[in-house]
Amino acid sequence: MKLQEKFIELRSKRQGILATNFYNFETLEGVLCAAKAKEQPIILQLTRSSIEYMGLPVAFNLAKSMMTYHGVEGWVHLDHGDTYELVAQCLDVGFDSVMIDASEKPFKENIAITSKVVKLAESYGANVEAELGYIAKLGQDKEKGGFTQPEEASDFVNATGVNALAIAIGAAHGFYDKEPKLDLNRITEIAKATSATLVLHGGSGVPAKSLIQAVDRGICKINLATEIKNAFMQTLKTKLRTNEEIDLRKVFPVATNQVVELVMDKLEIVKNEKQQ
Image (cartoon, rainbow, N blue to C red; front, side, top):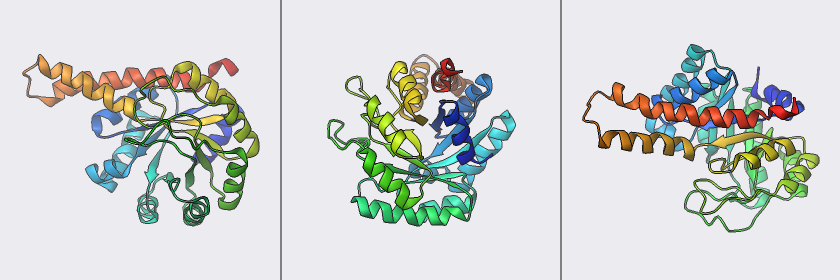
């Protein structure tokens, strides 16, 4: 099943799907063990940094082979693709989905870049995600305005033909200084204005209640990255303070298990089973 088809299925049930970034074998293993335990599909995401760290074919083939090994339904997605060239490379390797992020460009330029990617992706049958509005990235001001407007979302999707749209509703990338307050009414309005699958970036640190409400209002894809890195590294640091073991195969599993527990909790949230 193509990711576009999965989105339609999930939206009809008012359910979400978790999209998790991975950074190495251990974090990938943690994510997939959680998805297998919960018997839920998953989207595995790679950023430019992770691709450069692991190597494009290595990272992609690792994700695909491990999904098969664990028997998990899933898709590989390029997260925050910043150039047309990177998108093209990922599509050539076999990515199921790509994101082109031109959200910091002027509206018309964002449309032009996204439209070019959508046209390219059509020949691969791949899903395309874009971003509209201001969603603070790491190091950027989280208090700055720039929420996605329903009318602009409609115009953008109609002009580009994009499948999925990351919208600015009060979330931000990285950890929060204070509890984020999502504009739930805005989600409802945007969901009515466009048929595109709505995406929440900055899922790390958003309270479970807010995530459940967001899915119920129309969010279908929820991104999770920072909490995965944090769970793994903080556990590993703690373990290494009291352990002189040099066999990483005996040390890393403790941190991997923390990723499993984290992702299992998030999967339960996005499933939104109360609607069934």
